Length: 280
Image 1: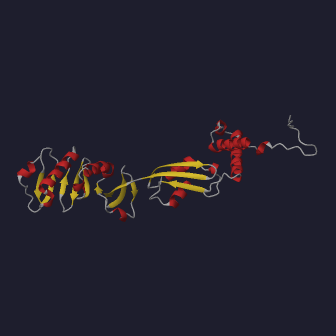
Image 2: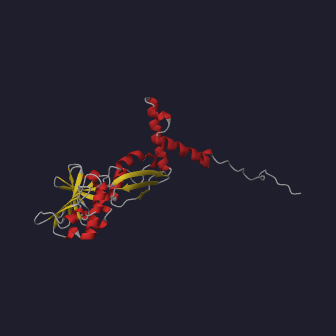
C-alpha cells in the first residue's frame, strides 16, 4: 500500500500563501471598480458637497493608478476614413499617447468628431487595456451647389461638405437655387432613370421652389414638371431614341404638360412638327 502524505518534509520551509492583492480575482475587481469610477455610473457620483468632492478625488486617484498599471492609450484605430484628414480626426478625439484610457471621454469625443465636415456619423470605443477604436461614416459627395455666385460641395442630405478646393468635383452636376440642396437627391434619382439623357445634363436650376429647369449640352433648356417628373423624363428619352430630338436645332423643350412635349427651334423659336410634339 502506498501512503501519500500532505505534510511538508521536515526542515523545508512551508510554502507561503499568495497575498490577496496579487490574486487574479482581486485584480479583476479593482479593474471593474476603476471602470465604474471612470464612467461615473455610481449613484454617489451625482451627489454634491463633501461626499461628491471626495468621490471625485478618489476617481482621479484611481485613474492615475490605472495608468501606472498599464491602462494607457497607446493606439488609435480608425475605420471608414477616406476624405477626412488623419490629423483632424486625432485632434477631434482630444487625446494623446500615454494618456489614461479610463479618463478618455467617449461621448465628448464622438460629438467633436461628428462636427468634422466629412463625417456623417461616428462611434468611439475604449478597447482595454490600451486602444481607442474610432469608426466613421463619411458623407458621399452628390453635387455642386451654386448660390449667390458661390459654390459648395453637398451630400445626399443636402449638407454642405466643403466650399474650398473643389477642383476634384468639377464633373458633378451643378444645382442652382436657394432650396436646391434639399431636393437634389430626388432630382438625381429621376435623371438617373435615363442614364443616356443624364449624361447630357450640365446644370439644374430650381424654379419657384417647385420644379427644375435643366441646362443640357448644346445649350438646350428642358423644363421638367412639378409632378411626375420621372414620367416626363422617360418620355423625353423615348423621343430622343426614336427622333434624336436633342440633336436637332432645338433650344427649348417643355415637358410640363402631361399629354405632350413642346419643342422649339433654337434659331427661330418656332415649334417643330406637331407629329413630334404629339407622339406618345
